[in-house]
Image (cartoon, rainbow, N blue to C red; front, side):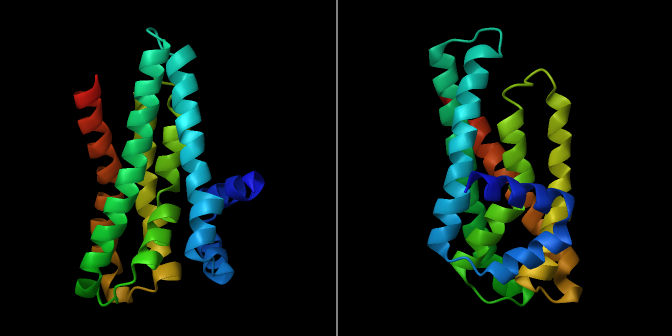
Length: 183
């Protein structure tokens, strides 16, 4: 299972068109997607946030490590659900039908760059510039709309811009809000 998760993440980041075609062919059920892909990633994010907050920051202690892990997990989980819901609600404006489970899968797979950053940055907290890599999500989203969501060609650019902003900003805003409230 772990091997499949890391292969899927690597393929979506490195070879997006082929990876999206493979994801489309697999036809994973919602249960398989959640329990064999998304929830394990969130578990990895929680673990790396805790370890990074405990040993790789200046004021590393258990309290700050737990706060960091909670903020990260709530941010990615909440961001995932909010982004999937919003994309599902705006879908008719772009010629797509509403299908929440499909948009949840799309959002989960399209967010792999963001999830990879949440996994790596607790160990490299001084390198804030790594967050510029989140812009690669725009490419992953664009290719996903073409091969997975099958958005009409005329609407791909508009939907890519809107969806990328939603997918990137929703976890970041939730993390910022919770960081402000908890710390």
